[in-house]
Image 1 (tube, rainbow, N blue to C red):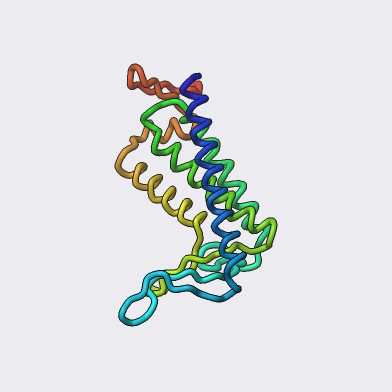
Image 2 (cartoon, rainbow, N blue to C red):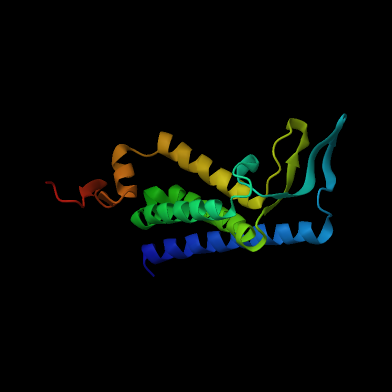
Length: 187
């Protein structure tokens, strides 16, 4: 099996496993908790630090774009298409492994929340850091956040300008010679 096929299969497995974990955790919350109820998981001296807190989020992160299901679905599809394009451009080289994994995590998280938006017209959130009053979130949000952190960190500390050109399809990376080749003709 070629490296390209292996990398694509790994990405698909990451995406599918994260969507399954996300949907199972949400189903467990819906099946075992009442809406707006909470269960303390970590208690401190002054009350709960971390808890399960079942809510319906009709917007995006922190409730922005509330009740804009169609817009959020379209944005999710556009983002997944864009990062899918980047994935396709970097599907072979080992140097882009962390970026491929991050893209798979990002797509898995986006699909997990998009399933909720399309099916329910809201996203099920249930993880809450009461100590710092952080907005309630879910497993898909963790996937997206970790992916974005890894992408940003990699872009700042790991990749060079030529690597960005590879991501955008302007250059190809030859791993054997560690060189970059332009794929566009000069005008």
